[in-house]
Image 1 (cartoon, one colour):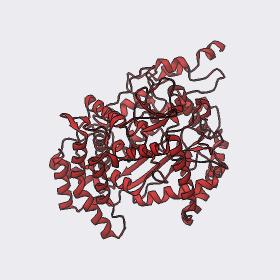
Image 2 (spheres, rainbow, N blue to C red):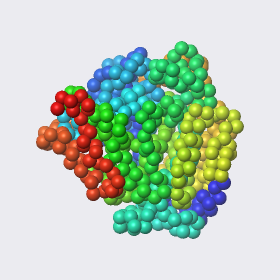
Image 3 (cartoon, rainbow, N blue to C red):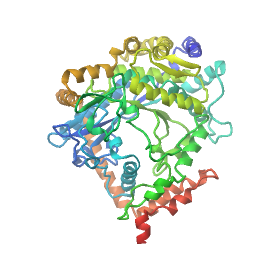
Image 4 (cartoon, helix red, strand yellow):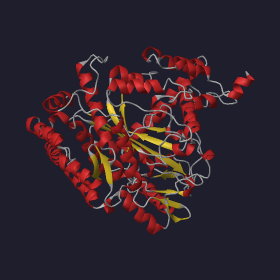
Length: 570
């Protein structure tokens, strides 16, 4: 099935010995809810002892005050990223409000109503107000329950040395670049990196179903997460536990990240070329969606309840399993940073928080995710049309709800294919790469000889679905009697285990200094925020104007920025 990948890999190993891959970087972003001793969501402020959520690069919040996000910098190895993630956990836990601990799984529990989910607060600076207003918009558009879901983002980039090699492998056996010839990236290396990274994103989308199969850890949820009558297809273990019998990751399924069915919206994005992708995102952040316009940008009190009435407030609102990323400059829109300087790294967003591991993820999993990224790198460049995108999205949803179902078939490029056969074909193609990476790590004396072992562990999951995290979790739930009791017990155990570990003195000192620096930075931003917030937002979105297609309708968003009540009052 993957003869081209195997051929490219054979040429790479023969001519380069994977030296071009040395210098690849890995980063982790892990979300976890703060909960009270009984497992209910915390309603307390983000702890000051953790610094300012707006400006602390290591400890911030996602949607809500209770949803902590722990962020590592790009690291030379997954082992170093995991070391940093563990140090952040060790730093956070003693600084939580008394009695609180982290809910170490993706799906939340004990959500009596959405009002208990407090939207994140980031201070009075214009940037802080914007961050809060964006989250109000998410709650308005999709509801707050969905925003309480936690996940892990796996960030990955390859060194500059990899892209000329990628180009040579492509020329030797692959189709054209995934970057239009007339696109504005002038630097040859930046063009190569962007074209190659975009091709990786296309290839990851095709096999993205493998992530929830191998690492999905949310096949069960608490009844309190569901609206009345929702998810009637889920089985019931007791009055509080609902589950998918063969499910792997309900987080990635029909009750996880999704757009509202009662407000149909066209958020299609082309994956044919990088510039098409960027143009489509730009179109969505500048085209008004009538239901959002009717709701109004301002609420009845004149406060921003969304940043705009457009299909997307900002590009981060576009949900996808993998995103191309570029580091924005101060005040720069991320989508424009991507347009101007191309892709710097990829963000894989489909990873569940695993209740089996104190930090939600371990070395074996990281090694396999690296291998999957490199599989996508080796896959050449083949455009994703609308049908291919639909198949990819459908396969992820199918695996999320039915991944361990005996004889399950997915939709391949040439028709139905057994999940087991497709997955094993990927594992087979990666074996020489895993062996070569282990040799390279051993030769370099890094002590991270884990790739072949990680691949073997994933083969076992495909050969026997009982080895998957989702199957093991359901076994634990059945033994415990409920998903809530099982998750609560494991989360408490991890809390104690992390506190019992030795403090990493160097990283602890770095994190401690980061708290004070972040508080100072937030204070400086608040002192420096002059003029009105509306003027700040106007300047921010004005960046879009030179980059919009002629058919976009940015001005319409300004005409509808008041709610119906606010317009009447005016």
